[in-house]
Image (cartoon, rainbow, N blue to C red; front, side):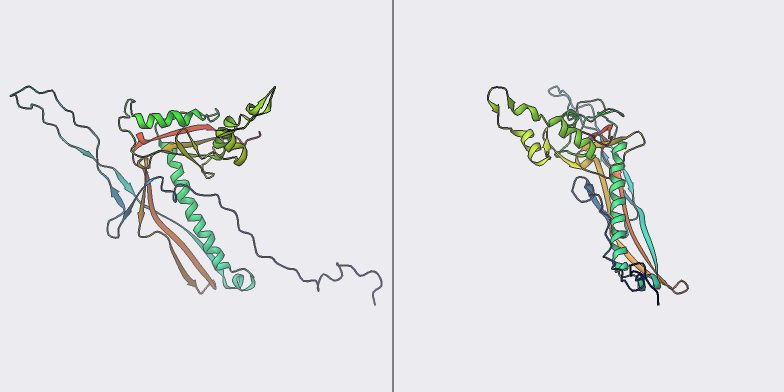
Length: 302
């Protein structure tokens, strides 16, 4: 018989370990693929892998006429082809029978959930990556984001009065911003000291300042709806590229192969293979209908 005090170290072989349900990794929200902010077309089965969208890029001109004299100039309509090709992306997971049997989680369901998130995230990052291809840039690397970018971009998109930019937008542009750029807008709007008067004390706060102080949120600024996209990439110099654009700036080509999950049995490995794939395409449709904002995206400290 052993002498001494009974402690948990002696009883560890009979103390049960409770395994809680595993936590899911929290995904960043997506805005490009589910918010109706880009033009969407669908390729039907049998249509191949390339979507062709011709555009008549030149305007006709009205000439000054003389009475009784025929119109001398004959003008032509010449379409320019635009092609967008779809690509396939996917993810696979291989799970052994033993791993599934000894794990208290529903691993097949968990794997399917994570695979779907991976495909959704890839679509979002591919679309956000198109911002860098826009020709016009109101910002610059290393410089803070300015709320004035939104006002300038909005006017330029509607005016279409620049060299090579003669076609105005037809629908209201949206601004998709990295959260750190959005933070710069909020701090610029946060005139918190303006509601203090020396003689009368506090006066009511109104407008943008009130919205900011109460909710830390501003939905619209300079006539533009704003949305935050945390999946916008930050480069090695702590810069990121946000953008303002109309729906006609970018194209999302869908196919009937939207999201397909297939399973296969590997007898030798005694395992099940799960494969999830999708086929889609993205491209810049009209460069003059978008403006990018390259700006510093360092972690906010105040």
